Length: 263
Image (cartoon, rainbow, N blue to C red):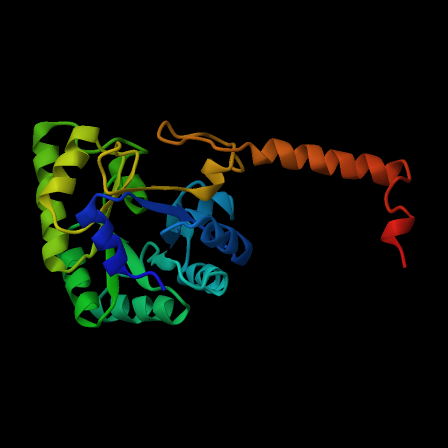
């Protein structure tokens, strides 16, 4: 079973960490067979699975259901689950309660966004409870309404210095992994070298200790839009369309089912 220690060792030895999202049993099996280091059950499922225009509508019940499915699909891969919007903001007690629910659903750790004083308290309390915590800085999708859209963060000197401080603060609070999203490459490199825990980048350049993408983006399954930081490695939406069209044609023409498909 892969552990956070394995990822920390990769940072120490300069080996890159690979991570992708997954939301179901079958995809989790494929990612593990391919050798992925870390699977994130991301609240991005709100957009690529449920069709929302934001992650803020995702519930704890959604996250638990999909975490259970992913956990059943892996044997050795580290699984981290997002704590959805509102699940760790009301009180420390509720934060611990909801984090425990995700761990009991099969996650090895949980991810929280931001570095406000309260979120730092959440990280400390979860760490005290023995829970692996992953922090998330830069563009934080759960705060999209406050930020005012999908905007690159840390562009000016003041904002960049603030993100460096936040990175050090979440690590001091107990975070053992840090996701950096949509920040300038140079800033991501600075943060990566200034903290002891691994950084995982998404739209943060090549100098992070690892990279993550939404699996639907990588495979070309989600086609509504393609973020600048995404590289598509397949075009499965087009392949699926061709396959379904072939099936429809075979059924209409009486080609399928043929005798070998019968009993």
